[in-house]
Length: 298
Image (cartoon, rainbow, N blue to C red; front, side, top):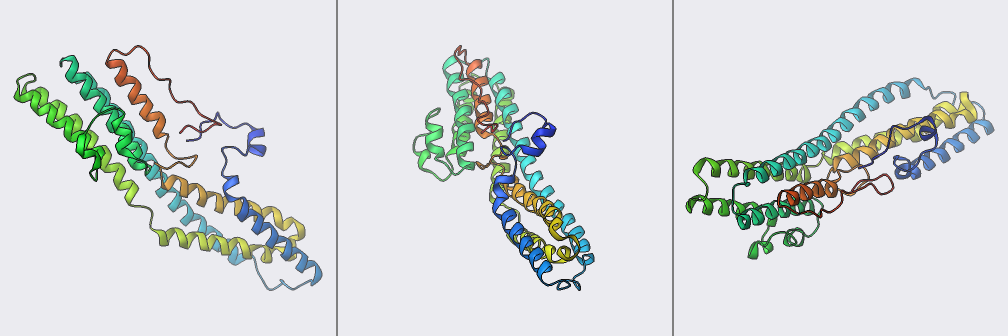
């Protein structure tokens, strides 16, 4: 996730790092070259584009803007829901840690390290990394590490441990139900994140908008070259920057758990859970909070 202060006027004009510009530079260059060709053709053969009116482009541009905003909103909703789910995971982790305060030190230590293992396993699962290895650094799930869902297996182990505590009389039924409720919240978080991960925005919808925006930006210079001359480059590049920039940004927000600059900072949120759990366990030396690198918090 990009972490920067409010942009100044200088940043608006010249900032490249943290902007979408590097991701759409090729498209802008292509549009600029087409615009130059259109202007040169209009200069060489005056009146060649006289029958091409800009009015249809105005109507198409308005409609395209509306549909682009719909897609951008849909992608942002996925990003924001992912952030809400990880916020819920943080709350559930804190609550679970607080509710284990009366347990024996050995039981509490194992269970809270299991929560850290779950958070790290979930992050690895969502990013297509080795979740079993991420979990193993915190919690041993045995043969379940080779199963199809090691992250969920962590919750299964913790649930069975809570049930054993109830069976042995070390927690009463109410305390057990409270602990089980927090594990249920964590399972809900994993299910919600997997739903976002496995259900992308329909490809045909994204392809339709991108193709329409590309055709629009490529043909627009021919409607403006006859009347604007070399000034054609300015409005065309502004329109292309807006459409292609929104499309590229939407692609990044569509995958909120990825590694793109605008994706959610899963590493930083895992570190927050890790620090708070370790502090609850009495650790004095905590790993430092994650810091942005080149304005990007991972």
